[in-house]
Length: 199
Image 1 (cartoon, rainbow, N blue to C red):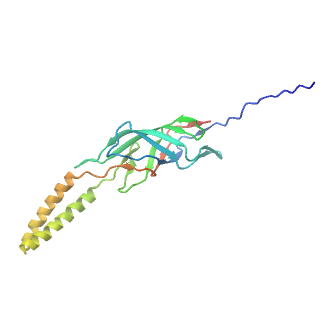
Image 2: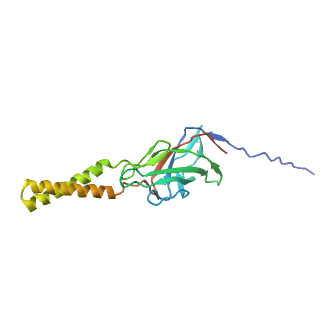
Image 3: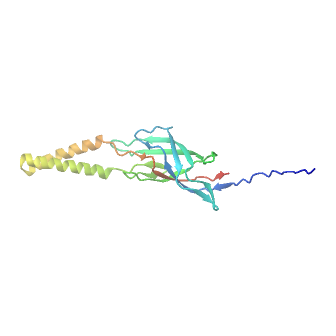
């Protein structure tokens, strides 16, 4: 009688670190805006690019990333730009394994009005002073035209221009600036603040 012995060898486990300073491109799954966002709101993203170390893919595309809104500040009517701070905290691979991590935003889709990452990773809207000046100038020009036609003189144009300028200033002060918006499908480049070990 022959006896056969089988030896079970442990499965090979590959482990490597995503180095500190590595970049990861993410794509928004849901949309957030400083118009409605509140601290604690959950955000969902997917990886849009792989992370490879030593020819080994550690994080494949379409891995899941979740985070929360840390701070959301709407743009002011007179001063103050919209500002959005987010904290990413979990990376989940397609095999179901999750890892805690805390990268910071490095760059973001500019969007319609030129938002960008500033300072400590906060996403801020570009200032709108130039647009405010243009709005005032357009309204002042309209007022001058109406004043000149009504009075048929330069004096009437001057009065109309001053009135138009005053209306333009009032409209500008009552109008909020542009909000920070990360729409579904927009991309966000983040940087790892510390190494993350991946099995």
